[in-house]
Amino acid sequence: MNAAIDATVASTALLTDRYELTMVDAALAAGTAERRSVFELFARRLSGARRYGVVAGTGRLLEAIERFRFGEEELAWLESQDFLRPNTLVWLADFRFRGDIWGYPEGEVFFPGSPILTIESSFAEAVLLETLALSVLNADSAIATAASRMVNAANGKPLAEMGSRRTGERSAVAAARAAYIAGFSATSNLEAGRSYGIPTMGTAAHSFTLLHDSERAAFEAQVATLGPDTTLLVDTYDIEQGVRTAIEVAGTELGAVRIDSGDLPVVVAQVRKQLDELGATRTRITVTNDLDEHTVAALASSPVDGFGVGTSVATGSGSPTMGMVYKLVARTGDDGEWVSVAKKSAEKASVGGRKSVRRLLDAHGIAQAELLFLGDGPGGEDEGVELGERTRTVLAPLVLAGETQPGHTGRDGIEAARDRHRRALAELPPIAMSLTRGDPATRTEYR
Image (cartoon, rainbow, N blue to C red; front, side, top):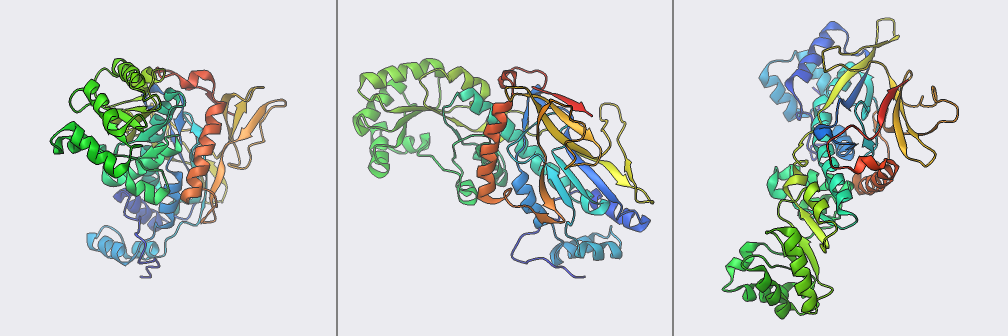
């Protein structure tokens, strides 16, 4: 078997479910594996009855698809499991995705039914990507959606992602990336900083204060090393005394104090008053302590200068997945003609057919509806637009003939996604920013 894969690059081919490979095995035997097929990845509803979702993870997925190759180790292990025919192992040895992928580009907002990814290739090629695509986009989009709501709630005040200890070690890196795309300004995770160029932050925990014989000694050690522009954690013992000691040690040019406990709206007001009375009018206040979008919103009008968010962003604020699915919506028949297919199960129905998408905007550029056109697929968006309707194209080519298109991966792709997210949010109606449970901010309309 020819295992054409760079041995220095980790394969992603086994980050999948067994039934993806058994379907390929059976389709190869039946002679249907090469039927041209279209799969769509979409969410039937928005988790938590949120008003919009945020696409995140696309760049990571495209990089993972490039590494979705079966090398010698992967093939040897599969052979040892004895559930695939030898001919299928030979087919896998030469596998690389050669089809097309269109999708909502990273940072874009989406709604129920939005074809976030449209994968067109042979059935065998496309079905192999199902688990990988869902595992990346479900998790990253849930985090980005939660993070976006927090950014909106913060009303322009910066947020730092601090959730590394609340999820898996590799998931923590992906979470920092997704939160940054949605508008967070920094992360505590150093690997995310190295891999993605995200600004990193962090100074000291309560253990550093407890290590020393007194709070003053701990502050003196931190300021001596990090300088007076550091952030001192003032709530290990008594907050009022902690603030006083912090200013005595660092002076009125102290960068910031951090508060990690207490009735935050009350405590923040007291600390701001105390800092001003001590002459530390430029010392910032950062708060942490299990924040979510609701507590951030409650504090947005208080004299807080920044937020550090951990558990709620790293876990998608209680919705660790977006509930996305990956469904076959069209395939060719024996005559080569396209056939629309759809699942009809109760509450799990899908809409068959190749689709293109345009977003309907009003005269002020505010989104009114997501228009899904049944027909020739991505690229045919103008068909069905009524005279006088103001729309814009949503889908973008991500992979064409197996080649990843520029602008969607790497650090440049992340920065482009941040900019795209800001523009997409500006199109949403005001109701989209509500933190209450409710209907999507725009309707989905099939044409």
